[in-house]
Structures are given as C-alpha cells and as structure tokens.
Image (cartoon, rainbow, N blue to C red; front, side, top):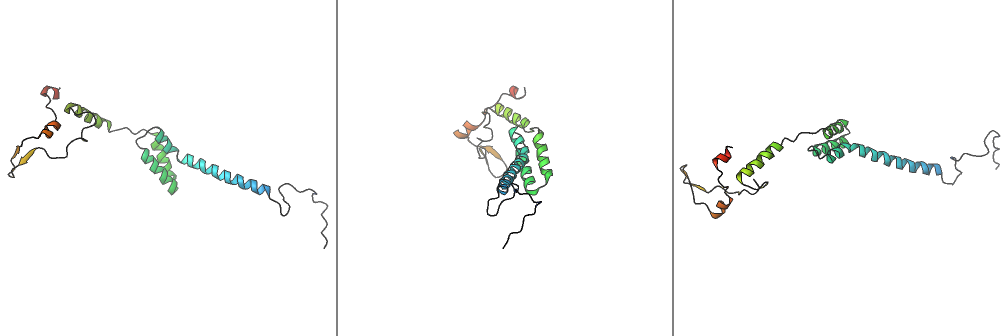
Length: 163
C-alpha cells in the first residue's frame, strides 16, 4: 500500500492544537481545567451576590434579619428575583423599633415596684393570691404565709405615685 502524496499547497508543519494520533491533547486538558475553574468562580460569585442582602442585614444588626434570610432562600429555590430585590430593600432600610417604649414602661414600673431591673414577670409566683372564697361570692383575706410576705411588693407612698 502506498501513501497518497501530500498536496503541495498543504503546510509542511502542523499547528500546535492538532495532535498526532496516540498523543495527549494538551489544549483539551487546558481548556477542561479552565472550564472547571470558570464554573467554580462564577458559582462562587453568584452565591456571594445572592447572599449580599443577608450579609448586609447581619452586619448592621437589623431587626428584620430573619425575614431577609428567608427571602434570600425563597429567591434561591424559586428563581424569582423579586424575593431577592425585596430582601435587598429590607436590608437597606431601618425599621424602627416599636418595642422600646414598652421596655421603658416596664422598666419604670419595675423601679416603682421595687423589683430589680429585668426580673419583673420572670420571678413572679405562679400561685393564686392568698384569698379564699366561701362559695357565695364573698371573698375574705386569709392569713399570709412568710413566703408570700417576702414576695409582696412594699407599699409606695401616695405622693410618690402621683408625682
């Protein structure tokens, strides 16, 4: 068998991306590694961008952090970008804390009652007051035990209450 003659117009030297039979295709290996690294880099960039609202809300100690986190998960699993936008907007705004007036009132009432701050409802006994009923709707005060006397708040002068 004879080999066909090489066309005189064909190049005598082959480019680097053409490999000889039985040799490793170096360009294919390099492009495969590049593709794997590019997919990983784009995935990491996507996840970093996707968690941006949650990281912003966590960093600034927002009240609505849990809502922003749930919206981020909804956006991730449903592929609806409106959840991500809503989470980003919630992470950027400051929702006012409406509970602080109630905490101030509770602290003032604890101070008036002579209870140490923060121990108001936590240390209150779970039993009924020392009153007994005879069944006819008439209640009368019974003898208070030593334990209930220790828990009962002290009487505050009238001028201090109305001041």
